[in-house]
Image 1 (cartoon, helix red, strand yellow):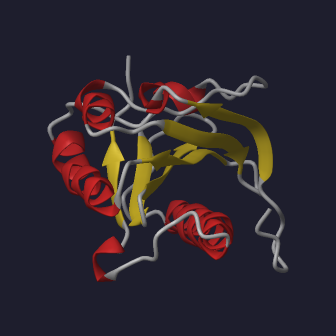
Image 2: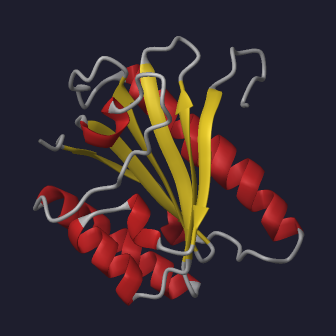
Length: 177
């Protein structure tokens, strides 16, 4: 995936669920449920160099306005430690993606909220200025989810077009005990 002359990310596990709270915790999960999220599709990957684990996916909301409301509430909830995105373990020493501190990014495209969380495979904290984590988040959210997956859906008439407000956002989230 995303090869274009670069080594590929290795997909370790995928999941589709009608229970959006499988991919978030706390107030973020509550917000998604309250605002009508009806499906999350996500996957866990290993970076080409093996140093990072990634869980990325799409939350399906009812409409563009609802997806934008979710997007706008994520940062304050993360900052207040009132929820987080959930990584998805995929066996083979990937449990760290569920608990370690992570860099996260999210973006709205049509009625979808695309998201990505990146952890170091060794569980150590990723600094906010880590270029590798930024590149991974861009690869996952912008290149794969937005341009590949959602462009394909938009061409089939099943997703709305992006607007000026759908610019990406990113933050960190602390690990869990």
